[in-house]
Length: 456
Ligand SMILES: [Zn+2]
Image 1 (cartoon, rainbow, N blue to C red):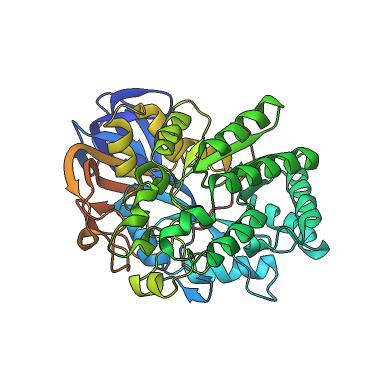
Image 2 (cartoon, helix red, strand yellow; image 1 turned 90 degrees about the vertical axis):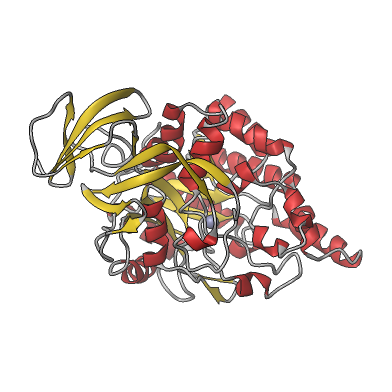
C-alpha cells in the first residue's frame, strides 16, 4: 500500500468508527483495524477523517457584469484544498457566439494547467434554441450531466420561458438535472424602480430590492414548470422559508426537487448592510435575509428539506466590489471555498445544529450523489477515490484574509472564530495540503465525467 492513515475516527454519511485506511493507486484499498505495514504511515488518532467536500456551485474564473474574477483555477482550488474541499463543480458560461461544447472546451483550457483538485462542469443555458437542445445530448454523453438556468434578467428568463421549459424537459429525458437560480425579475425590476424613485437605491437597500417573496415566487414557478416539463430540478442557493415551503409543496406532489443553501445565509444576516465599512462586500444574489431565517435554514438542513451546502464561490477585489453603487449594478458574490467546511463544522456541529454524519452528507455525499459522482467521490469506502480531509476538531482559528489563499484583498468572515480546522487534505491519495502548507502541483486536478442523474 502507498499510504496508511492510522487510528482516525472515520465519519461517513452512514457511520462513524475508528479505523486504519489503506490507500493504493489513488484509491481506498482497505479499511480496518491494524492494517499491515506500508511505505508511508501517518497516525491521525484523535482526528476525524471526513470524505473531502464536494462543492457543487462555484464560479472560479469568469466574467460577470463586465468584470473578470480575481481568482482563477489555481487560487480557487488551492483555497478549496486548504479548506478540505476536494471536488468543485464549476458553472460554464458560454461567451457570445460560443456553442455549449466550445464553452466547455474554453473552461477546460482555463482549468487544466492550474487546478489542484478534480472538477466537474455544469454548462449554463442562455436563451436555449433548437441547436442548444441538440447539443445537450452531446454534453450528457461527455459526462456533463447538469445544466443551469437563471430565472433573472441574466438569463432573460421571462422573454424565453417556453424555451427554458423545453430545455428542462430535454434535460429530464437525457437523464440530466436542471439547476435553477430562483429570483423573480418582475419583482426585482418593479421594486428597484420604486426604490430609485424614493432615493433608496444605495447598498443599504440592496436586500429590499430582491426580497424573499421574489425568491419564493420564482421557486414556486420553477417547481411548477418542472412539473409541467416532467423533469427533476435542483434549486441553487436558497435563502429563506418561502423557498423551503415550495420544496415541501413540490415534494408533497411527488416531484423530485433538491435544495441547496450557501454559507452566507447560514452565518450572516441583513444587518450587515448597515455596517460602516464597505457593506458592498456582503452583496450576493439573493441577498442576506433577516436574522430569523438563519435558523430556518439550519433546521431545513438538519431535517433534510435542504440537501446540500455549496459556496457560489466567486472572488472579487474590494475595488471591483466598490465600483458600482446602485442596488441593480452592485457586484454579487465572494470567495468562500476555504471557509465553507470549517464554518459549517463549527457553527453546525459545534452549536448542536447538525450531527457529524449529516455534516458529511450535506457537504460531500449528497452533492456527489445528486451530480453523478458517487461513490467515486463523497464517501470513504473501498474503491472510492482517496479524497479525504483529516480534521482537527479542537483547533481554534480566527478567520482573516491574511491566512486565506484567495487573491481577494479582503475576507468576508474577517475575525470570525471557529473551532475545528482541516489538518491535511488528500486528493486521490496524494497529500495536497498538510498543516496549511500547499503541496499540490498545479494541473494535477482532473476533469470529471459524471454519470447521469440518480435519485438520492
Ligand atoms: Zn452562482
